[in-house]
Length: 113
View (tube, rainbow, N blue to C red):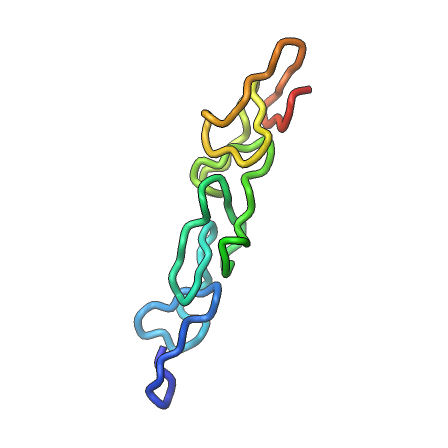
């Protein structure tokens, strides 16, 4: 960003500033599942997500919740399949656990019942 005196300033945290931005808030808030520092967006780490836009740091991305699988951050959140349980921070079907004999696990199970 260029100020009236010709100086450039960093884009505000949580915002994207494309070429020609005239404000610390740039052109838009950081998109969901990303955090933005100095106007650059970075995808939240694997098995983490954000459900709101405009976050400013990787620490604001949250772990995939129990009972869910987060293949592509919030975009790919699905329920844990029946017969399996997902204790949390599950990235794909390889991270789910089978229900053992004597227990049952309906769709979306966080643990065995």
